[in-house]
Length: 339
Image 1 (cartoon, rainbow, N blue to C red):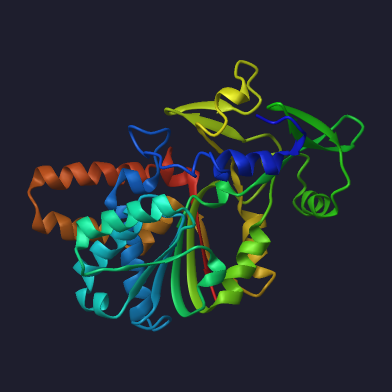
Image 2: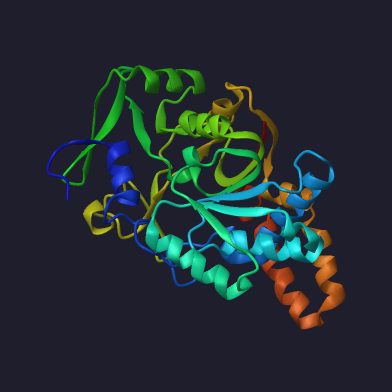
């Protein structure tokens, strides 16, 4: 694919979002796709976020005419689940809330509109934006599930002489060379990264939200930790098989733009990107603790009172997958920010 040398961040960006990139074309998520997400696991994931929205409005932080914004919506399942549960918990809010998706790909917009039409008819309309810069909102609740692991990143390696190397890609082969990127060096120094990924774009994303929404709560879920692993986490997901990026048995060109590529989020870097512009991080926790605190058990109890035992147990088992401390429950983290 690549005839000339690219920075790894450029190669990563093209892999996912280029003209023929992985996310530039519709992909199935779940059992038939390359990977599972919390959204594909249980509607109660979105339902719990819906309950969080109701609580944030009832406590008075956001008004009833706020806009609920999803970034990285794919099919639109998450936002749809949020709407469904808001209707269950406080239906009158659907008369005042607005719902929006930031999505630049027209074919995905069409899929999202079709799905919402199927779910809600003409009762719920989606406002689409190409980019966060277009939002221009007074009040918003913003949600993003697994977007930061898809931000471009550089691969960094410190050699035996303590010289920092950065990855480039030519003809789908990764090579390391000495670099003098001051910004990357500063991030590596700050977080003591000697080997691994350095995300590119967190600071600009935080600034975009800050510049375009006057008051908001932003909640995001992703896998990672608050400390660097100092090892490469970058990997490829293909039909639920995981291939480390440096696996000698694979050829990158066989997976390029056809399979998902991702890496662990450095939450310290992400949180600092917001707090450095005075956006407060009010929560960082595991998915397990956050979903329980936000009320997922309460929602299951409501379900239990209204359906037969078989239906309840089926959904309860799905929720267990979300909360499992040896799986998604601890592996995934949540960060909540407020301005």
